[in-house]
Length: 520
Image 1 (spheres, one colour):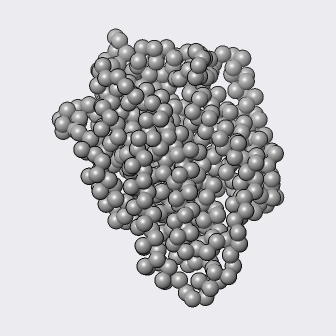
Image 2 (cartoon, one colour):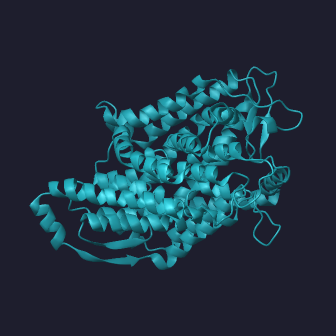
Image 3 (tube, one colour):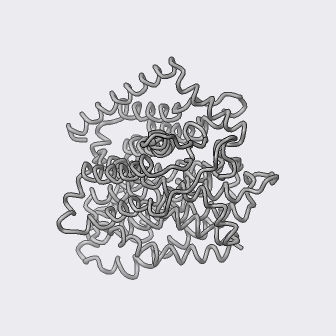
């Protein structure tokens, strides 16, 4: 890192220390313990993640869906992400994270204004535990605004961004140094390794670990953006389906009663989808993009090769595993294995931040400097997703209230569940989308290792949420981070719609073939 980067790293360490001290003070006051008690109590009544309107709190009316037009701010935000970088008058303005933040928060305020002034029916709230909030006689529904903000920020955004920040920062302290020949087979090998790692250290961890050496290997080539796109397909999404820690939707399924090892049964889908993606990449790169490289660039790439060498792993690999175990074990809604103790609310996030602090304080500054590590990519994700999480709340409320009606009306089977879950996961956060359809598909009295969901439907929901998160840049958090890192390295990435051309032409047919093979 530069001196500026070192100063920022020191500031981050002190901020983390301050947050840990504040959390200790909150523990003394008993706040996290009381929030956990609410979660545990809700679980005991099986209401903590029940999104069916008929399961609302006793004595309260069922929540009602907001009108469809309330998703307009969310659609506008997606349009800004897609269009503003392409317009000559706004492309440089949009590059500033503060401007992204202004747009995201501004549209979030529009959404909150609807709940404050125009919404008068009950609202589903999910923090710290599930409950239904009634309207008051006041002209301004402050309670609704608080509930929506709690759903978006306290329940979803904070765990999401802390996990991404932790994996991003710790992985930034590991350097895979070297410059292999950037041919199709080498790049496909990077993706295959990342796809396998994704299920064990999460898609974010695997992506942050391998994107920099992939870019370093391809620095002599002129055509690199397609390689990054396929990397997003495989490493940031489709490789994370074998274990619950691979992708957030599967982890929510584990918390909802799916066996930890059930996802290993998705190995045939894992092999088929990732195998077809890697084979397609090799063909496209070999037959088109690699041939477009100049002779001098190819010669330079062949002669300037260096063996791979990994540094910084002794400290940071255990820290990455620590983040994974924190996510797996410190969920307040689930007792620690072999005990009756439930983790205090946000202890999981504090542990992750503590591991980040250890990485920054004890890790090599030189390695981060060689990695050209900075916080720009994670700040970009944080700036945009705070608006995305707020603006998508009406869409999630609509799904939560009307999901079961849609299932009955359309007589949804596994195929319909796959495309409905996947199509929405491409534009909404795939974790709550997964949970909505998971709860909708539950059959009372069904026991087993699938959490009460018939196995064919659970396979469809899991595949849709994980695989189709790759359809857009915003379908999964690591997608945007990899895009930002590639652009900071000088790679001109496709626009929002340009990326969707790749996903529609390449990924969509592969997924259609996969559903034909594996979903009834």
